[in-house]
Every structure is written in C-alpha cells, then in structure tokens.
Image 1: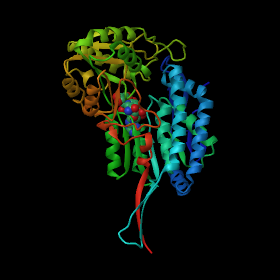
Image 2: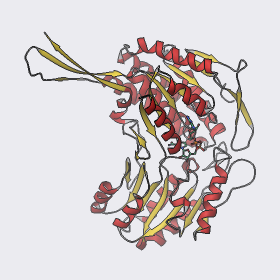
Image 3: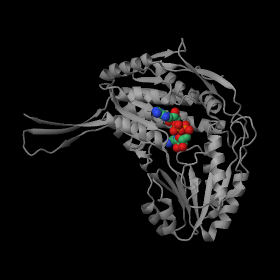
Image 4: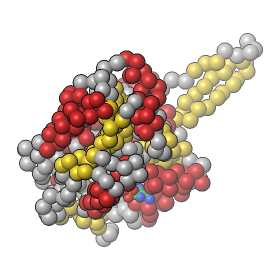
Length: 476
Ligand code: NAD
C-alpha cells in the first residue's frame, strides 16, 4: 500500500480533479507508484489566502494549544511510523530500517517543539525613568513559504512545520515531488490532531514555478529552503528582492580529519557506516577524508574492507544496507565524478560503477590518490563516494578542510585534547563532530555557515527564524 497522494489546502485534501499529474516511481525498480497532483496557480493563491486568514487567529493561540497539537502529532508519528516508513522506502529508496529511524526520530522533534514553544519569552528592560516600562516582545513573523528536499522527506519537512506552527506562524509547504508520501502523511497527522484549517497547507508543482509564485506573494513574510547551494542562492535572491526573512539549509562537502593518535579501526568502522547511510545522499555526509600519514594504511584497509561488506539492494529487502539513488539523474553525476578522478590520477579502491540496469543502484565507492583539483574534492558528490587523501600535519589538514566555500558539517577523530581543541577552533563549519556523530538532534542547533546556509533549525534557536522582535516603551 502506498500513500494516497493529494494537496492539502485550507483543511481540505484535494485529489487530481483535472489537475496536471506527475508520476511518482520506485527508484529500486522503476515501477510507477502513483500520480501526484500539481497545484494550479489558483490553488496556490487559495493556499496563501488560507494561510493569511488562519494567521490572524493562530498567532493569538495559546502556546499550550500549539504544544498539545504538536505532541499529538508526535504520538501519531510513532503509531503510524511503519506505514510512513514503507512509503519512504518505496518512493525514496532507503532501507526500511533507515526510513523507520527517520520517522521515529521525528516524533522526538515534535515533542521537542511542543515543549520549547511554551518558552518563547520576551524580556523587560530596566527603564531610565521610573514611570516608563520597556518590553521586548517576540511575535510570530507571519505566513511561511517552505521548500523541502527528497533525501529525508519526513525529517526535513517536520522540522520546518513544527518550528513554524510552534512559533504561531502558518505555512505553505512545497514538499519533494519525487518522494511525496511522507509530507502527505504529515498533513494527515496534523489534520487528525485538530490543527485549524489553513495553518498548514501542502502544495506540489514545478519547483521554480511554485517558489516564484509563493515567494513573490506579499502575503508571505518568511522563506525556508533546504536543498542545493545554487537553488538556495536563487531563492535567497528572490527573498531578498522582496525583503523577506529566510532560513537556508544548503549543501556541504564535509571534511573528515583522522589523526594518527586516534583509534583508527573504530574511526573506520563508524565512518563507513555513516558515509553510506542513505546512499550518501545526505547534506552532512562525510565526503572528503583527510587521514594522517602514520595511520593512513591501517585506516584505509579497514575502511575499504567495511565498505566492501555493505549489501546493496532494494530497501524493502531485510538484508539491504544501502538502497538505490533516489533519482536516475544522479547516476551520470556519480559516473562523471569517478571518471574525472581516475583521469586526474585517482585509484578506485572499491565500487566506482553502477550495479545492474534495473533501479538506480551505484556501488559504495572509495577513491584514493586524488588530485586537489579533481571534481570530487571540490563538488559535493551527494552520493556513495568517499574521497580519501593522506596529510602530514594538522595545520595542513585544517587548511585543506577549510579551503572550499562550504561550511556545513565536519568530523574529526583524535586521542588528544590538544588536537580536539585545535580542530574545534579551526574548522569552519556549523557542525563539528569529534570522536562521534551527534548532530541533527531535536535539542541541538543544525545549520551551516559560508555557502552552506543561513540560520539554524532545532535547539533553542529553532524558533528564531520564525519570530520578529517588537520593542514597546510605555509611559504612565
Ligand atoms: P536540485 O538543486 O535540482 O534540487 C534540490 C532540491 O531543491 C529538490 O528538492 C528540488 O525539488 C528543489 N528545487 C529545485 N529548484 C527549485 C526552485 N527553483 N524552487 C524551489 N525548490 C527547488 O538538485 P537535485 O538533483 O534534486 O539534488 C542534488 C543536489 O541537491 C545535491 O548536490 C545536494 O547538494 C542538494 N541537496 C541538498 C539537500 C540538503 O539537505 N541540503 C537535500 C537534497 C538535495
């Protein structure tokens, strides 16, 4: 069973009814799963009007009421997780256990936002005169236009929706057309949890047409996007032209620094599991591996062996550890990155090619001996490719890690607190993981610097992008 796909506007689920439909397919087989109705321009206007109307009352709603709805959605997420996860595996491709992990972790995001939205406080500033009162109020910004990607269809959408709704905003969200089941499931849960009509609206369409329409509307006050750097820059320019606040969660090219004083075998095992999660289609996936010379051979031997063990197959098969790429269009990108690496002197240690002709499977790939100018060392692969090079000293590794315009996630393994401190201070990234991976939790902020984005999601920062500050001064 696959999700019944639809739009969700002003509290109503809308089917095809003559609208243009897009095929949604299973990346493991190529089979058609369903048709996805695109919103017409009139649908988009209806969604915007509904969100604007709903904002008038939702902004005044009690945080206790918002909290109750978010908590109920958390509970429903846990109840419905098996079916939602199956939908994600069918349209996105990741193994079922990974999809289930994505959905159940999102229940915690709902709980976190349910708690935290009750603590959106203002402050009182001591006045200069005894009969003056100075207040700082934090108010919801208004209607949010959000755009979420296909790699974590549930997670990426719920973080924006929970933050907007918890802050007292209303939202029109365009989910990923290739992997839509999770966002439709989210709409059903908020509906069943009693969210008033118009507070959440879900639309689909041609991405650039929908984003132009929504961001250009005077009803929208805030734009939130997760996706690639080039598209993020386009949408940021559009938001800037209309002076709209924005949160941008964009791509990275995460460096990993493996120092010679770490447990190289442990680092190799952890990193090989992380690298190939979701077939490497993760914005925080480790991609550029800098390994210190003294442990290089030991680390590489273990990392390559662990990578060769990864069983690739359809996500619904219980023993599959890595599924297909979500899109056929990513296969030639992987092939061209590997071909360029080899042409510039690299060695394919394992993988390097697609598997079979049915589905979009690409082998877990480890490349070594890479030239600094090779494409894969400079452009985010967003797929199952690890690029590994040795380094001599930590200053050199930090300089190479920081040499790109991105700054999302970063990783390091070291046994020394001196190195750990130097790495923590030296890496230009929004997220620094030392000796373990501990990012993207509901209670911790997640976001990039440099070209990787603007703003944070999660943590106590989660509502910042959805609130405006109002200063009130009053004399008796
Ligand atoms: P892409 O740039 O075409 O699209 C990325 C996402 O943005 C998709 O979900 C797409 O529907 C959406 N999108 C594209 N143009 C848009 C527009 N004008 N308005 C609104 N939304 C728009 O790339 P792709 O081939 O789908 O994915 C590969 C690249 O995307 C990777 O290089 C990776 O950097 C990036 N990506 C990043 C994330 C992330 O979590 N930061 C997630 C998915 C994809």
